[in-house]
Each structure stands twice: as C-alpha cells, then as structure tokens.
Length: 508
Image (cartoon, rainbow, N blue to C red; front, side, top):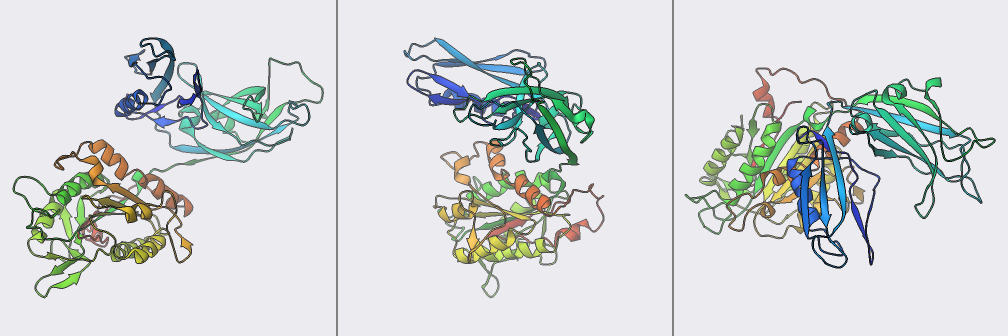
C-alpha cells in the first residue's frame, strides 16, 4: 500500500465475556495506513488480550495488483485447542484522492416515524461512504435529538475525502435511526445522495424521503429529511507554514566519559545522536536548510560570563548553520571553547522564540522550538508562565529528553492530561510535546532503533497544533513565495536556544 492510503474499516474492539469474543464498531472509522502500519497492526493483534490465546495470525492479500483488500484470520478457541478458526476481521483500503476540501452541512427532518411506545422517537443520522468494492463504511454520526419527530441536528464538518474520497458522484447513504438505551437502535429508514447533489445547497433537490421496506406507510408520517445548509472550504495542512527551532542543554565536563557531551573518537555522544536523528526529521520542513543555532547554560570566554543564548558558530551577526551537519560541526567546536554551566532555565529560551513569533501575525510563519536536554527544569514556575503566554502565539515546543534522568516536569509541561496553567490562567492550546530519546535507542545507546517511530512521535502533535492556531485566527494558507536573495538574512531573525541549540527557519 502506498503512503497515501486510508483504512476504510472499523477498528475491532473485544468485549470479553465468559464464552465469547465479540467485535463492536466505534463511531470514528478512518485511519491512515501504510506498510509499516500493517505490521504494527499485526503485532498488536497478535499480542491482544483475548480470553483464549491467539495461536496464529495469517495475512492474505486478495488483490495483489491494487492491494486494495486484505484480511487477517484469527485462530483461537475457548477450549484452548490450537488451529480452530473462530472468526476473521476484514480491513479494506483504497488510495486517497488529493482533495483537501472540507464540507460543513446541517440537516433537519419532518414528521419522522414514531418508534417508541410511550413517547416520540429519538432520531439520529448515520452517514456512509461507498467503497470501491461496493460496501459501505460509516463516516459520520449526528447527535441524538431526544423525543422529537421534527429534529434539527447541529451542523457538522467532514473532509470531502472521508465523505466520497473526492468522487463527487459517489453514492452517500444516510440511515435514520431511533436511539435506544440498550444499543438496539430502531431503523426508521434510509436515503441516498451524493456530494454533487449536496453541494447544490438548500433546494428542492435536497429534500429526501426516507424509505423503509420493512413497514407500510403510516398516516401523518412524511419521513422527510432536508438539507438546511452546505458550505465547502479548503483545508490546509501544516506543510503550508513552518519555522523550526532547536535548543539543547546539559551541564557537565565534556572531557569526562560520564558526560552526555563526551566527545569519543569512536562514536557520537547522546546529544549528537539526538541532534542528528531529530534534526534530520525537522530539516525537511525548512526551505533553505539554514539553521540559526544557539546554546544556553554555559560560561563564555574570556570572562566566564553565564549566557542562556549564544550562537554556536560564535557569529552574533549571522548564527546560521548549513544543514544539520553544520549544526553538529558548530556544536563540537563550541564544546571545546565554553564551560557548560547550570542552572537549567527553560523560560529564557521559550520567551526568546516567543518574541519572534509575536512579530508574525499574518500566518506567514509558524515556529517550532525543539529543545534537547538532560536536566531537571530549574525555573518551573517561569517556564509554565512562558508556555501559557506562548500558547496564544504561532509556535509549538518539542522537548527531547536524553540520558537516564526522570523527566516528570517535562511530562507535566506536555499537558496531554492536564492543560498547563500559571497564576490561574490556562494555556490557550496544548503546544508542548515531550519525547524521551532513550525509548528509541538500543541498550548500548549507540543506535536509533526506529527512525520512523521517532519521527512520528516527534511530529505527532505539531500538525494539529499548527492548524488549530491558524483556524482560530481565521488564517488561510497562501501559495509559497519564490526565494529571494535576502532569504538568508531573514532567517536569522528566528532565534533558538539550548545548552546547545539550533533553529531552523522554514518558509510557507
């Protein structure tokens, strides 16, 4: 399967009872899928906590030309006898279109069939997209309107790819159900339409009679569903904007083998490994591959002044390094001339980048500060305040932790469970992503086990963070501007910092 494929099946969830392993459908059904993802699915299914052990999983491709359909057979049994086939799960995938439109629509209904004996129906709509193999897959469910035969559902937004994969004439099936508490929802009826028909908006063409072959026509029941509104707009991805920034920090004598900065003649140190691995991931989003690189937390020659923002190449006028290799070269050179020194203060770095981000109000740039550190945060209160302030600006923060230390403070800043707050004020957005580098290297600490997994986790939250900012500000992406002769000098305005730091400037 190519990287631009999407699984069109529901995830299987096991409901384990004494004598059964039952599969149910969740509401959200779409997931990107690639060859590595298939392997990951197989691995996770093989270790799934079924009541009885999964004795064997086999993979069979039904269409080797298009690779459009494949399935896994599960062999397990309540009796524990290997080889007894008890069921299968089918995954369907098809190539995605390049359509990046999103549609917002709203529906209402009139005089629906009454299904509840002691009251009116509790209707909701279920939308299905048709697949290439003739099957249908759920792509959206509306909310339930309680005790109402003339419901007006809230408007909802859905990618056109999810609705019809960019094929405007592909059938869209809509089922109307009466909600029941026990999950055995009563079928009221169905109708079919297409994106092309829906795009006509509110008109006589978008009034649908809900048909149900399982009942006779009742009096005073019209069973009509009407499209109230329809709007389509372009959805821009985070590739339209981006400015990357990197920061590193550590204390200790780099001449000592115990230091994470130790420069061995035989292998790269932990910082260099993290910088190279993560830097090679983010540099692809930098148009000119020029990285203003800074260090923080060191005593500088000749007077030993402590600095939390010095250029690694010692050039205050032009701190740019050419590519990640240039950053590494400047990093190694700096280790020979400065004395690494604490404390580990994050706030100055974040505030420095925030000042640059605050100057960009038109959406032409989005800043990503990447900090690589092995230390405990010394200024946690100030760092929280800096994060809260930065959350309203076009920037995100990725923290990569190296070494064996505990990174509880980094997890707290991550804000996945509880949004970061300072002085009673919560961050407008979650802008922090923490990645412990030790989870991606072998036991010897000399090799990255999975660059793909590292890349995925480093960039996991950036697209949503970027798009949430742009959408909240009503900013739409513009076509990229041609490179100009002063693009190099412009990029120096985006600062970066670290115990060793790097910043990358990417144009939209």
